[in-house]
Length: 234
Image 1 (cartoon, rainbow, N blue to C red):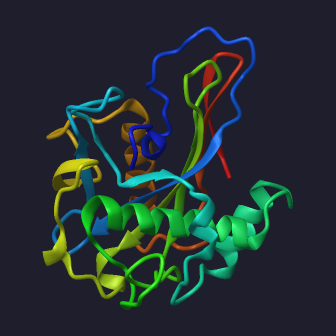
Image 2 (cartoon, rainbow, N blue to C red):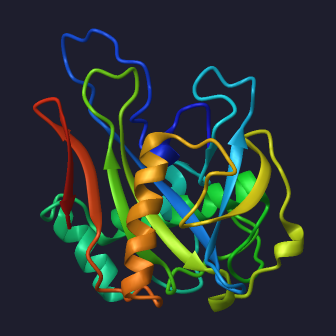
C-alpha cells in the first residue's frame, strides 16, 4: 500500500474544509486468514514511521486500484456470485473486468507489501498469475467527505490452506513492517485504526456463524450519512 490509506478505508484521516467533496477512488485490501490453530488469525503489518499518514498503525495489505490491474493475467476467476454482487453494487456502472481488477489489485498489493504470491509463477505484470476463485468478499468502507483523500475500499478474505501459498517467503517491505498474525477476535496486541477494528469485529461475528465464510454471506458496508457513521449490509 502507498502512503495513502486505502487498506483501512481512510476513515481516520484528518478532515479539512472542502468546497467540493472529493470523488472516492477505488481500492482493495486482502485479509489473509490462518485457521491452522485454535483461533483464526489475520495477517497485518505496521505502516512505516516515515509515512505522514497513520504511521505506526497495523493494517491489512492493500491499496488503490491501478489502471493496469485489469491487464494482470489470472489463473482462476472470481466466483460467479461474487462477481454478480460487485457488479450489482454499482448497478451496472462497472464492468466485470473492472470489478475483477479490484481483486487483482488486492493480490498485487499483497505481493508488493509482503512478497507473498497466490498463484503459479509466470512472466508478466506480476511474477505470478493470481488465483481468485477462493476469495471471499467481507467488507466495504467509504471514506467520509471532507478528507484529503477518499477511497471506496473493498475487502477480500482468503484462507491460507485453500491455496498453494509459501508462507516462508513472507517478509517486510517499505510499506509494511512488523508483519504478524493476530487473532481476528482479539487484535489488541497491535494498534489498529478504528475502521480496521470494526471490520475485524464484523468478520469475527461472521466466522462464528459460518466458519467456512460462504460466498453468499452478507457484507457490512461502513460509511457516513449526514455526519453519522452507518453500517449497512450488502
